[in-house]
Every structure is written in C-alpha cells, then in structure tokens.
Length: 220
Ligand code: C5P
Image 1 (spheres, rainbow, N blue to C red):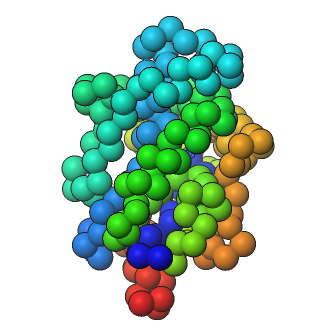
Image 2: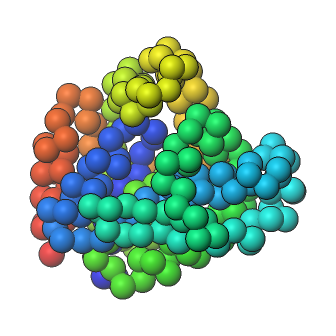
Image 3: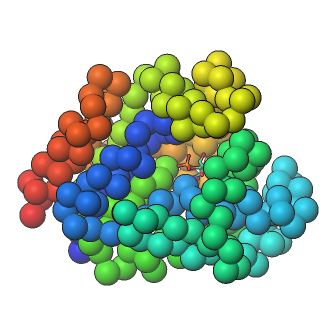
C-alpha cells in the first residue's frame, strides 16, 4: 500500500495539529475525516433533518456533495459548493455530530469518499476508524491520546470565542461525545491492534510530530 499515515484518537488529543505537522514535515497531503462528518451533520441540520432519527439521516446521506481539500497549509471543506470550514466548528454541530456519524449509511458514503482520496497514498489521514476500518493496511498507524483534562483544556482553547465553552462545559460535552463515539455499533473509536500509541499529555506538539515522523521513516 502506498504511504498512508493513519492518525486516530479521541477528541482533543491533538490529532489535527500533529497530523498537519507530520504532513508538512514529510511533504504529504492531509485529510481531516472529522471535518467530513461535521460537514454531513451541518447539512442535515441546515435541511431540517432530525439528527436523532437514524432512518431520516440515512435517507438523506447520499444528498450532500462534500469536497475535502488535502493541503495541510490550507485545509478546506465544502458542501454543495459552499465553504463550511467555520460553520462546522460550532457547538451545535459538535454536539450533533456523534449521532449522525453513528448512522451506517453516513459512514459507508464517507468511507468510500475517504478511500478515493487516499488511493494514491502520500497522505496523513486523521479520524477515529482510519487504522481499524478505512485503511487497515496503512503502513503507519498511530493512536494519539492525552488525559481528559488536557484534552478539555485544548478544546476550550479552540473554542475561546464561544462564551459557553468553559473548560467544565467542554469537558462534559467532550466526555459525552467520546462515549458515543466509542460505544456506537458502526466502527467505534478504537485503537487498532497494530497501532503505536502516543500519549501526548506531557509532550509538546513538536515532540509528537517527531515521534510520528520517526515511525514513518522506520517503515520506509
Ligand atoms: O475529529 P473531530 O472531533 O472533528 O470529529 C468530529 C466527529 O466526527 C467525531 O466526534 C466522530 O463522531 C466523527 N468521526 C467519526 N469517524 C471519523 C472521524 C470523525 O465518526 N473517522
């Protein structure tokens, strides 16, 4: 299989910054699969689809046209031609995304898109099920973790512009999302048996990037 670096882990583990940094360091493309689930969720909310109703979500899963950019310096995502990079980061989308991403028809559609994008290799792909389901043959698999407190603090920093996003609120919402993501039937968040676990609680971003780059070079 051409070079695919699978980066999985829970929310706030530092996957996005690390994945983009690794892609830059190695001159690879970058795909944020979480943004694709967020884009699907944004579209469902926008079109009045009740996101708690799995059948209603499944019935519309084929409708939005989702296009993901793969430049680590300018990640982009659009739905039906509209750039949704900002609206997919709202709390409304964040709190609805786990319900939408648990629907098998949604996953089937987005996994097919993800496999198309990564077919030529040369890409760092971040998500929850990349090493387990989307690219089980990926030559480099990383499972990135961090303590719950550190993850919540990172998330709260990301959401600094949102007055409701205190560390406590973020921590509770994040714990709920991780619980839903790890306990759903379809492709739950899990560490692949052959993934290398990196705990970033006490590591800086540069150290995490360095560790992943080392793994990628080892398998060359
Ligand atoms: O990575 P991010 O926090 O943006 O992901 C948003 C949500 O998308 C996750 O909470 C999860 O429900 C879903 N997701 C998924 N599978 C992936 C990536 C994200 O189910 N590969």
